[in-house]
Length: 116
Image 1 (cartoon, rainbow, N blue to C red):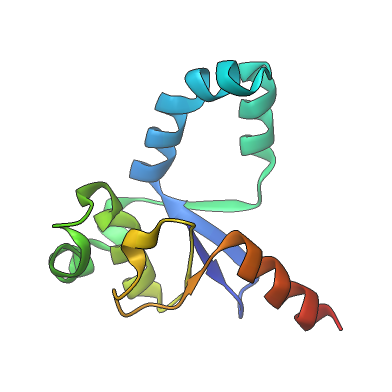
Image 2 (cartoon, helix red, strand yellow; image 1 turned 180 degrees about the horizontal axis):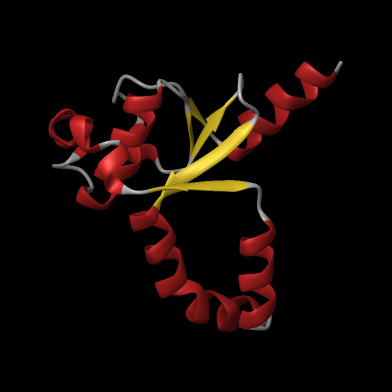
């Protein structure tokens, strides 16, 4: 996911959402929460979902930066490069890709400081 501080927006790619939906049933079972509840919580997020054509121009660059480590991360990195936004992820594969990376903990700390 990316986080745009100037737009106060969370966004991700259609690819990432499809991946989340694929693993939602096993996640629900693992944490003993009804799948429908997880789906509802996902639907309630103020999340903009971007189609590949909106970041297609950065796919080659993103592939160079992260494709060898995790090809599934290429799309979201390409989106972050396109929009010039930091990424919000706990995935260490994004380190060294040239974009600002917020873990959940660091994002919460940043938002707390911003609220002061």
